[in-house]
Length: 456
Ligand SMILES: Cc1cc2nc3c(=O)[nH]c(=O)nc-3n(C[C@H](O)[C@H](O)[C@H](O)COP(=O)(O)OP(=O)(O)OC[C@H]3O[C@@H](n4cnc5c(N)ncnc54)[C@H](O)[C@@H]3O)c2cc1C
Image 1 (spheres, rainbow, N blue to C red):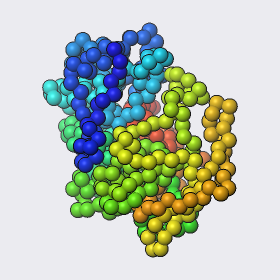
Image 2: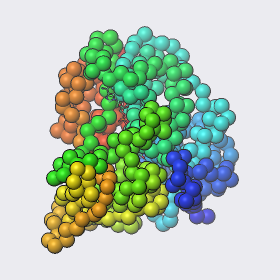
Image 3: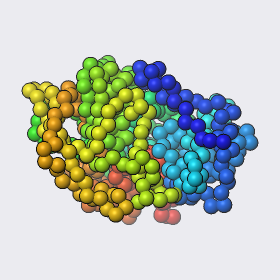
Image 4: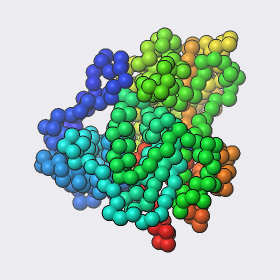
């Protein structure tokens, strides 16, 4: 039996709405697919792949046997938010599945979604407040996945937990970055209710460092957890950057999510009727592509300075490593031209952007095919006409003048990540401590907080 791939709603249907692009799979299909799991002696999916250490083969067996309650109990051992990861995780577990050696991996992510949605539908997901309070309190700054994960972990150990969030609602980039068509925000609201029933208090619309002094939180609590993400996006400071119509990806994506969530009336940046150029070939860029298509863009192009990755796993990332290879998202399949080896030189136009001057580059590759450095190819300059440019080139870390960093007197690494100060009971978790990464890694980071025995 082969792995199936048709779990998306039809392209022509989905590209006109913001509902999740993946459709729920029938029980029979999920059971059949999980039965492909070989229950390997050394389950790389569990040990090398999943950062949470999910008990993937056992879960698969339980699903294949139709024992969904058992599957949920197994999943709950390691994962507090499977409804998030089962929608948006790149599934590191699947990349390390032993089946990858000769065919396609077992369908783990969709199976996880089936397990958790079955659990919610049957009322198995209930609040798990601590058996006893420990009389100590923690302030968590930031309600993204890392903050939520730290909050639930400490609450279950008996801590009194208050999470402070500057946005109007909780979720961090789950809510204000990742589009609805990948993760509906009702999924976050549903979990928030459970966390509140467990006793976690959320204080939203409060920016720590501005509305509330961070050092006050230190004095008022036994422990402070800093989970503020990586707010600074990498900009493209080339001539013409000031023109209207050139925006950072999160201005565009966050605006769309806030509009759907009812926080604002209309989107601050619209792709409707415009030719859209997305600069940056990663996942954030892909989210811009899907959002621009749904807003009614005239056409969408995504460009990347790096070379086109190989269609299949590169020899530089042999199994069971996460493969360096071309990734094509559901958004790309909805209608987008993609180009590689293009450097952006200048934004053109009058007051508003009308095009971007680009030039081809040639990469020097390592023996394993990894790009090392590039040089411009003379005579290859061209202009890509567009009325909207979205910059999706990653994040630069935590600014050293961040109020939280200054007020808590925290140190940054050379790569602008916050270092925990365990001696003063301040713990940094998630992207702000690691650099921009993945939801699953943020969740692990929040869950793994190790408090010294005198305060734990
Ligand atoms: C567009 C986009 C798409 C992505 N898609 C995926 C994906 O599909 N799969 C995946 O695994 N990862 C994805 N990621 C990465 C993932 O979202 C992040 O790695 C993850 O959200 C990091 O979690 P975090 O809790 O550390 O930070 P964040 O999610 O950034 O949360 C930090 C929170 O802290 C709050 N905060 C900051 N400063 C303060 C303050 N002073 N006071 C109070 N609150 C504060 C912020 O408002 C925010 O809510 C994506 C990222 C982006 C930008």
